Amino acid sequence: MTKQNLIVVGLLATLFAIPVHADDQQVSERKVSSANLHIGGGIGVPLDPTGNFAGVGGTFQAGAGPNLGRHHSIVGEFMWHGLPPNRNALFPVLNALCLTNPPTTPNLPCSVASISATDNVYALTANYMFHRDGKLFGYYFIGGGGWYFRHTELKNFAVPPGTACAPAWGWWGYSCQNGSVVLASTGISSGGANGGLGITVGQATGLKFYIEARYHYSPQGGRVSTRILPVTLGIRW
Image (cartoon, rainbow, N blue to C red; front, side, top):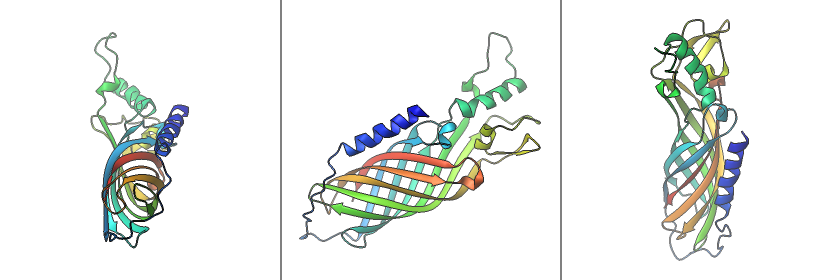
């Protein structure tokens, strides 16, 4: 996990390389909008234990809500986050696949490319945002909670009866009984929480560009929990 931790540090360093000292002189002559909107995308880093089974993936977010004043807003948000499976998630599946469908010749080994799988997280959250908007630069803190749904599916594979339990099978939605894999569920959902911060560049009461880092956590019903740190860039109104 050292490599992923270095990626996280690098992303956060990039975030704070932008000037964060917001101009405190507010543009008071212009009326504050009654609503906020945003849309953005970027990349996300899975943290342990999610990072044991998934790698860096793309992310997208969009949201809107009312402004409660110059510094306070409510933001309803949709988020998608891709979780491409890594070798820890795929090797147990590959081994089982090779046992049930052995290669026709010794020179034709089983391949990870033969596994068709999807891994994604979808979230609907309600969040509070505190923000300071200067003439050019601004910053904000945001946090809240909501519903998180993780969809992990092996599309072209059925686990052989009697397959021994391993952590990877729990990631793919299987449960265990008496030490053997017995049942698959492609979707796991539960409540969750998030918190993070961002920097904006643009007009205080108009269109702004933003970069944001936010941590998301969901226990996912007691299975492998979802812990991700997406870094997004986009526009806000």
